[in-house]
Image 1 (cartoon, rainbow, N blue to C red):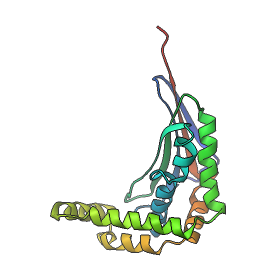
Image 2 (cartoon, helix red, strand yellow):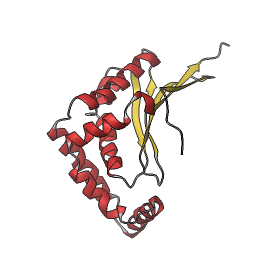
Image 3 (cartoon, rainbow, N blue to C red):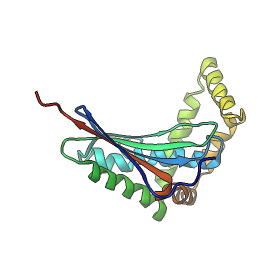
Length: 193
């Protein structure tokens, strides 16, 4: 078992490259847990589409050309990683401040019921579409078996449907904290000719 983390962990990489990237990862539970389903909704709320919090705060303001959240269902505990490709008109510190502010906001303020229901509907519809056809059905069932619990094929949709705004706040408080995050910065420099 990994020992408890004390404070931020940070890594910075500087390479000859035209891109600048920022990422923050939080340690999260395995894909069989109810909390993982809550985190799935949080990831969508923060980065899925034009109505997402970080798209509004970063892409619409031209501070980042893209922002996304990687959260994969794993058998063991995993990571929830938010990453942004920074534009030339912004900086790593500015993007970091905005991302950390938005994750902290989840711990203090409940998201609206209307927005939550929209996200849940979209996730559940995506889940149904991902099961269209025998190959897709077999593939998704195989993924659940790889998680260590084939019944997750059925229980995931139930978990998504029962998530409340209070659940989101509690899970955010538990996982989106300083002693549970790793920050990565990629600084791209352009070589002089």
